[in-house]
Length: 142
Length: 142
DNA sequence: TACAAAAGGTCAAAAATGGTCAAAGAGAGG
DNA sequence: CCTCTCTTTGACCATTTTTGACCTTTTGTA
Image (cartoon, rainbow over all chains, first blue to last red; front, side, top):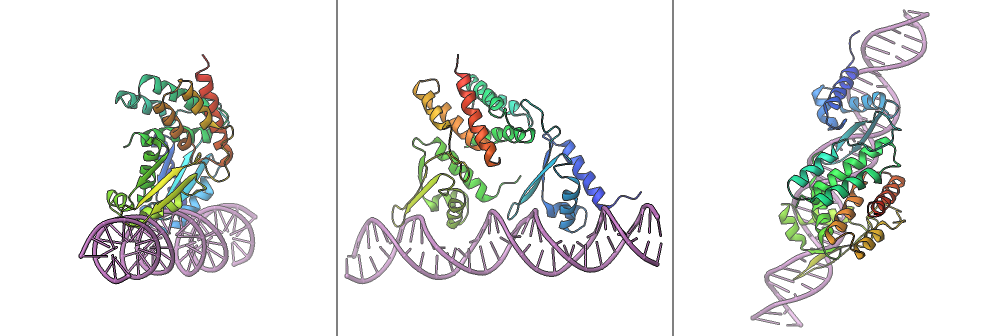
């Protein structure tokens, strides 16, 4: 069977996600549309038919300048425990290497990261893990 | 995600505040605009969209010679309707009082707590706030 | 007091994205 | 062929950011 445009876009996105560090990608709707030489709403169509929550994906977006569409895959929504994904612990270790965090601080932050999201569903644990990483980077950015 | 200018300015201001002694900074609108090579009204835009009362900030200003813009964080900048309950910030301050946390650590943890759950729905922000409080207490229980 | 200089404020237009929805098209099955 | 479903397209909408022209307030000074 010949693949439809929608199928090809779906596949493309899935490859990107599978290659991504954290099972999550951010794209520009327009850019993707250009890549496949189609109208932007085609992308929206693909997302709404093949990347739904039921399919195990979470999509978010923002309009306006620097707008984006983020597609995240969450494999097992009800798993317990911490999700080190993206590798937050690695980020913390790097900050320690570069002397921005000392041993005590690093350990404390790890402990907090793990325990602060104990009661969250999987996809939100990812977000918190991600958020802590981002917050740390920001905090030491200046 | 490529950050918009507004995002970068927001982040810059937040770091300055988090590092400040009293959660309050004074800037010159023009100076900040120059730092980011943008028009001054861009700064006003950032303030009016990301440092509102609802976000937990108070902004004051004065025009004319020696004018300034003061941005003060008066409570936890959670999103709309959030009540800092249980009062995480109070817990952190108490730990600081009892010398279990130093100033730097306390500020860092506050910053992380606030920012790690930026993108979470309201009910999960509460959970994270709660979780951080619990984790901290546990961490210093021995 | 009058006026200039030095801030900051307002507001609306333009630019940059993404979203919605319904009509038209294309295949598959009967 | 006919019908049903899925796909493709496009016109129009909504949101967010960026810019700039013009306005107001405060201070300094002749």
